[in-house]
Length: 223
Image (cartoon, rainbow, N blue to C red; front, side, top):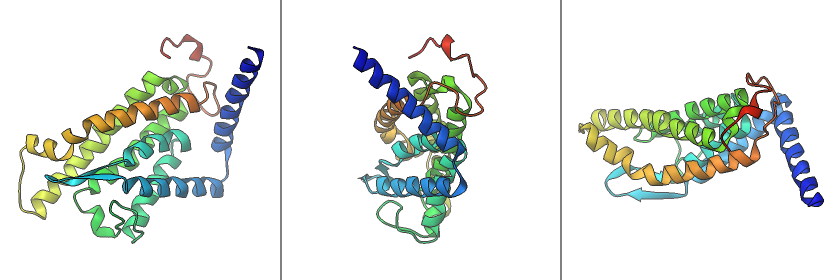
């Protein structure tokens, strides 16, 4: 029992020091981390399931996106996805299907990629700003909001514009949802649950930066 408590204490201390060092790290270190996450996003983009009725495939990207802000913080999670989008637009072939180029950002999945950046910024801000956000249910709620209200909203707007301006076809809202959101719901919820569980275990429950609820985490009622 004493050994278990010692191991747990060591783990709690380690995750605090990791996040504290991440928060205080220099520019070069943060850029390297952001590039690493951009690369992971590119690899996750290749884990995909094409849908016969939609130009938007199911991919594993959102799992990396949901964790990027949590692990890199309020600005650098978003920066990692901005690097992914920017370098991909310049020709790095790490968009889905090992493709790259500016045209991909103006294609059917361009809105989702923009949503990745904003969702990561949002989750990074909430993680760094509020200790309370690091509980499982709080993080799951935030991740579902980021996924469906940010990523999918922007994704559907981009998809609708592409269909209208490039393909010359206009879909009803229901048709657009069937093409760009509804098939993704089960997988996205599953990815959010797993990502929230990882975030719950990986994030410290102590203040490491400028949290506004410092000293109030003891009043939590959620795991």
